[in-house]
Each structure stands twice: as structure tokens, then as C-alpha cells.
Image (cartoon, rainbow, N blue to C red; front, side):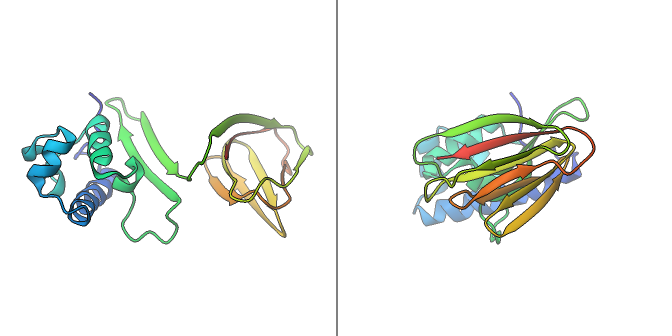
Amino acid sequence: MSNIVHKENSQRASVLQHVSLNVRRLRHAAGLSQSALAEKSDVSRRMLVAIEAGEKNVSLGTLDRVAEALDVAFSDLIQAPGSPDPSRINELAWAGVIPGSKAVLLAKAEARREVELWEWQLEPGEIYRSECDAQGWSEQIYVFEGSLTVFFGDSERRLHSGEFFMFASHVPHGYRNDGTQATRFVRNVVI
């Protein structure tokens, strides 16, 4: 089973601390003892004690069960406590055995109905203008090749390869490739 953390990986230390603090805080807020959470989540009390102490590698599946038992999202367990932007996670959630294998949870958004996943490519000089979406809709953009200018309302933001951005899409918005090479990005529309 794949673990969320590997103690040998120094980048993981912060996530171990986040999980530890968040599980303890959310368990207390739910009025559950460690034994009650263990029973409700089908995770051993011994494992929960180790998780809350920040001492234990834990599988993604185990954290999913703990999150479900606490009635919170998985992201609520790994996000830095007190984060100024609760939609922006940007935490390495899994590291594989082979160096370079990883999964980073970039962001979260509330969805009422669905999330659309799009792959886009804009050639140099290309512009895409979008109509305003309904109030409450948002977009998540992740650039994986080239650079992209996202314009929304009266603002714009330039993103380079490896960067992501989220914005409320109920305002006029669109995308522009100001670079000299093709831009490829993933776009999630959160409805």
C-alpha cells in the first residue's frame, strides 16, 4: 500500500506535522476519543496514537477512512493549519519508492454538481475569451508546459510551467499565450 509519508524524505516532515495536528484538532472538535475514532474509522487505536504523535507513515487509504469518520475532506487532514488561503493546499501527499515519483495535492474547491477536467494547448499568440460563468463557479489552472497569461475581471496573472492558479469565473476571463512556444495546461471547471 502506498504511504502518504516517508520519514526519510525531509519534505514530508511538514505534512506529518499537519496530519498530526489536524487529526487531533478535528477529533477533539467532533468530541471523539481516540478509541471512538478508531472504531468509527476502522483504524487501530495504536495507529491513531502514532498518527497524532507524528511518528507513523500512513497510507492514503487510512487517511481517507479517518477523514470520512471525522466527516471532513482528505485535504483537511494534510493542509497546513491556519493557512491564509484554505483553497490552496500545495502539499506533497505521496512520494514513491523511485525518486521523482510523487503526487502533490495542489488545491481544493467546493463543488455543487461536478468538476470538468480539460487539457488545453494554446499556440504562441493564441487568445481564448470565455463568457462569465454562473456565480459560485471557479476554475483551477495548472500549466505543465510553456507559460500562460490568465485574465479575469480587471486582473491578469502569468503562470509558468509547474505553477497553478484558482479564480472565481463569474467574471469575464480567458487565456493568452504571450510566449514563443506552445503552452499546455490543465483546466478544471468547478461547478
